[in-house]
Image (tube, rainbow, N blue to C red; front, side):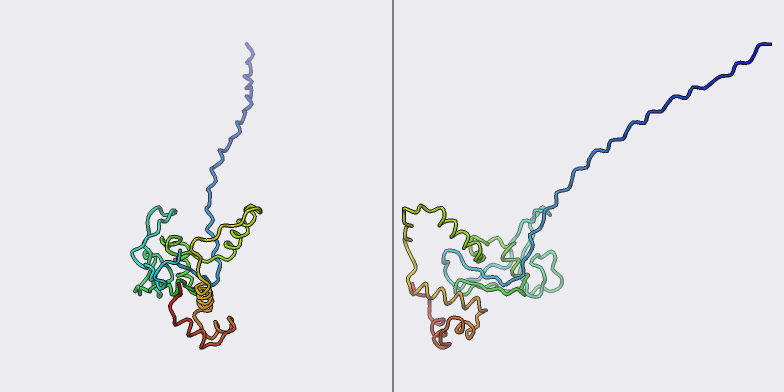
Length: 204
């Protein structure tokens, strides 16, 4: 009888191919500027007249880059947002009035501040936000870049001394939230003298 031959199975080694994960593109997150809670002052640009000026508070729009479309703005004292599409309930429209060329907005009125500082289309064209740090930095830069051998050119139409005094008094008045007694105390002048100056029109 023929002997039975055993079939031997040869194991073939399995080579595992490493799986390479393709890196996913990182999402670029645009950091929103942090909002500093503080009192803010706004001024009309280039001595715009009249110095008592009512800024448009409805039918103005802001292009929202994140959403990709224009959003209507409106300032309502009873709302917590300047965007109409986020408002709830009744909308009581409030006027924004610059008096004597300035507008003081206390830190508690965050909605109005954000409307004026971030969203209103007339910012930097009709009015600007007063930034003492930036203005001081600009003055320092101009002084450093100026040629020390040459004198600065005098302005063509400088304000008169009376007008400079008037402007200073009214700025302090607005910064004091239009409080006559506090303004007089800070300027070290009599309250009646201050009231008399405030009642007069701006000198040329």
